[in-house]
Image 1 (cartoon, rainbow, N blue to C red):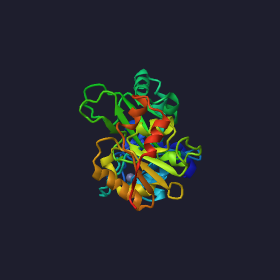
Image 2: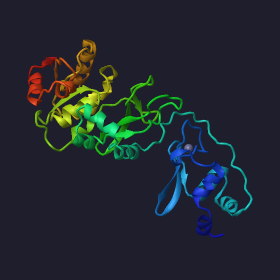
Image 3: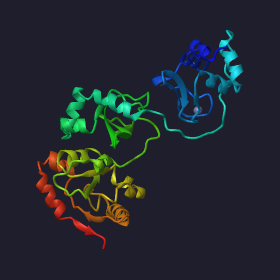
Image 4: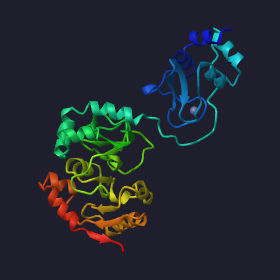
Length: 326
Ligand SMILES: [Zn+2]
């Protein structure tokens, strides 16, 4: 038997379909080698050869490896099985590792797909109403989706959403949907299960160009996603966003590079409890940052978009901020 000949005669895509059935949406299969909660088995190409890989249990290989592992047999038996014309169904899935595996969704690919649809008129109207300019839409790779994948099937109402990726040095670490017409299932939803709250716009810490209104060693921390877009990219103040002040996590303080940032200004929305503000300030101060707390009369994006403030108005508020700690 010629090993290469057998592989050529048995393309892995048809062998996998033969034993595992058709793939789910987006070419993912339930892995036959471990128990899982979402499909993590897929095919990919390396050196012009298709191979399988499971993102859950890390099993991978070519078509012969697949058969060996599926039936728990040796190479010679696997090759015999591939040349046999009679079909023998695969044994039931193995393993009892009950672990939560985030769905292996390629967030970058999805981000690009949604961004390509952002010329949709609903999306354009939405972003424009929020004061997000066309160049900012491009910079933040914002998008539009006809339906968020985690929206329940039974959801009734307008399924369209705008999409907000979390970019960090070329990677997409999170992808959120904001329903255009929320209808009882949460205004904001994740692209896939398993994603969690993160700081928004960490990418700005690694941008080369200087900001017009803050020193390179200064950073503003505000809330949300649209606010940092407006304050940071559009108005020239380096800013990251906490997705809701009460979602703050102590370990986030260590995500800010100390060699780069020395001074942090916190500008949370009016109405955020003093305890929460103090907690965030204390965590950051504990990491060695000099801290100042801004007192805002309205949300910072509203200041610019709704009330027509300009950068020097905002700079005046920063200059009047209260120093935290000793
Ligand atoms: Zn697996």
